[in-house]
Amino acid sequence: MKKHNFSAGPGILPQEVMEGAAKAVIELDNIGLSLIEISHRSTEFKAIMEEACYLALQLLGLEGKGYKAMYLQGGASLQFLMAAYNMLESKGGYVNSGTWSTKAIKEAKILGEVVELASSKDKNFNYIPKGYDIPTDLDYLHITTNNTIFGTQFKDIPQTDVPLVADMSSDIFSRPFDYSKFDLFYAGAQKNMGPAGVTLVVMKESAFNKVSRVVPSMMNYEAQANAGSMFNTPPVFAVYTVLLNLRWIAKNGGLAGVGTQNDKKAELIYNEIDRNPLFEGFANKEDRSNMNATFNLVDDAHSEIFDPLWNAANISGLKGHRSVGGYRASIYNAMPLASIQSLVDCMQEFEKKA
Ligand SMILES: *Cc1c(COP(=O)(O)O)cnc(C)c1O
Image (cartoon, rainbow, N blue to C red; front, side, top):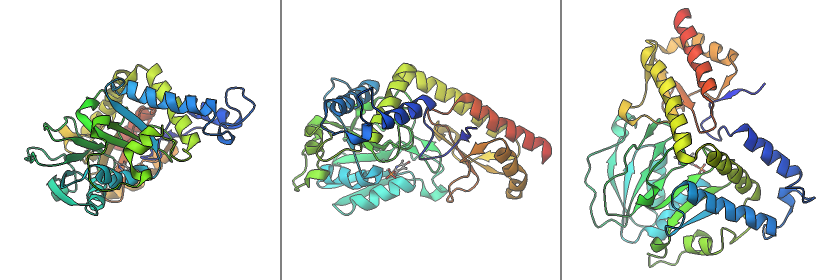
C-alpha cells in the first residue's frame, strides 16, 4: 500500500507522473525505444526539452518576457557558485535565512565580496528577516524563498531596484508569485518539481554576460541557454519526468490552482498544530511555509506515544531535520489533502492517549 509521503526531498510526485515516467522508460510514445536509450538530439527528445522549457516559462508567467529556462545538472548546490560566477562583479548581497542560504554565501565568497544584509540565525532561523537596508551598489540581492529545513517562506519579494536572484528549490511552482521581479532563479527538481538529477534555472536574457571574468562554458548561463540545455548530454529521464509534472500542474489550474490547494493543505496542518496543546509550531506564524510545516512536541518524551501512532497510520518521512528536531510535514504540490487529514487524525488520537 502506498504510504503518506511527507519526505522533504526527494519528495512526493503525482502518481500519474510516476506512471507516465515508468512507462516511458519501457517505451516512449510507441516509438519502439525507451526514453533512456535514444539520442538526446533525436526529434523526440528535442521536443521534450523544448516543451519542458516552454511550459516552465508559461506556468511562471514569463513566456515571451525575455527569459530563458534551462535544465542543468549539479543541483541547487552548484547554482550557489554558478550564480556568483555569472553575476558577482564587485559585491553581492545575501539574506541569510537558513542552512541553504549559508551555503550559498560560502560559495559566493570564493569569487568576490559578499555582504550578509540580514540573518535570522539568532533564533535558529525561525523567521524571515525584514526591515534591513539594501545598498543600491550591489550586483544582486540573493534570497532563499522557502527554507526547507526551518519551514519559513518569503511571502513578499524584497522591494529594491537591485537585480534579484533566488534559490526557489522547495517552493517553485507552488503559488502565484511575481517571478518577473527576478533576474535569475533556480530550483533543484527533487523537492516540488521532479526527480533528483536536474535543476531548473530561469534567467532574464538582459542579465547574461554582466561580469568581466571568463566563465567556463559549463558554468556559463548564456552558453547553456544558447545550446538549449544541451551543451552536454542532459539528464533525459529527469527532464521528461519534470515535463510530465509541469503538464500535471497545468491541468490542475496552473499556479493559481495548485496555490489554492496548497493554502488549504497548509491551513489544515497549521490549525491542528495551533489547536493541539501537545504541539508547538517552530516557525514564526507570519513566515510559515506552505511547503514544509515544522513543529515540535511540548514534551519531547511524548515521542514514545506519538511516533508509533503515525508509523502505524502508514505515514512516512515526518521526522524533522536534526537542526530543528521534532517533526516536519513536507506538503508539496502532489500531497493530497487526505494524507494531511491522516496526520491530523494521528495528532488528535495522540492528544487523547497522552
Ligand atoms: C534541497 C535544497 C538545496 C540543495 O539542493 P541540491 O539539489 O541537493 O543541491 C538548496 N536549496 C534549497 C532551498 C533546498 O531545499
